[in-house]
Length: 344
Image (cartoon, rainbow, N blue to C red; front, side, top):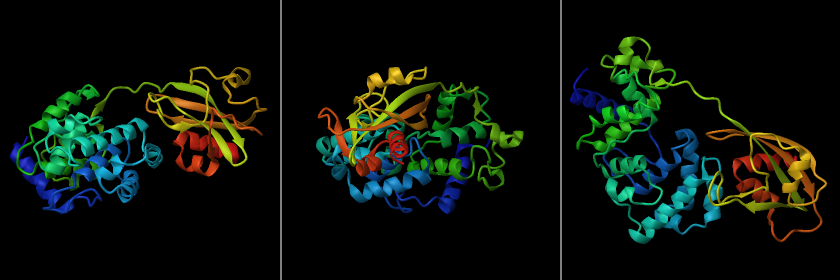
């Protein structure tokens, strides 16, 4: 294995030529905007660069600074977040923005410890912001970096148990020389060359020093344990309309889709709901008609959500009556799909 300095030199030279042009990335030689770096890192935790880019541009167009975001209406931010994964991240985003605005005068702390103390900002994001926005030495390890380290050193331990070992290997390369560029170079290498299924080894700046390449099967790293089957749950959603308005409820603050506006539903459980049992949870007497079934995949389970629809002549004041157009535009993906099925 070549020395740390040799690997760093080769990868940074490659990065200077092949770095990706991303809307949150500073031009070469310029300091990055900490707000943009933080926002992008939070968005990228559950989606791809291509998918996150349009959200990033929308957010920064509407809320160009952390102070603007801190002053934003919660529901507007939640609606803008729809399609980016767990809404808990959006709630944490607002909590962090408000802490930066109120406690730090709208300026992000410049070190990992200060960043880590912010609400909802985990160890990975703190390291990424410290390195990329403030050029501080930090061990920034995401899935791309884990893959590069697993292949570079041909790590035989299986994921997720190997995470600690891969993080320790990545730490060997962290120095005070261009720490932000180094973090981004590793990410870019994993995203564009050292790809999960089809690594482009001939184009890699580390070709010839990679143990997995030498072994002839780099695509088999990182090693993985057998994946468990994803459990399936069942629920029933109720789309109750009054003219051009639909009855919504505010979901509990904790749990999946916490704090969001959604359709009234039964609890989600392992067994399907018979109609006679499900309507006990309905927001009105009906009659209810079947509209179809929405299948939605969460991280830890799949959900089959039957959709029942009905109309009413009277509005129950306990429900949140929302114009259909607003509900379709701002509801979480699961409920948007259910509404689309109900009104088609």
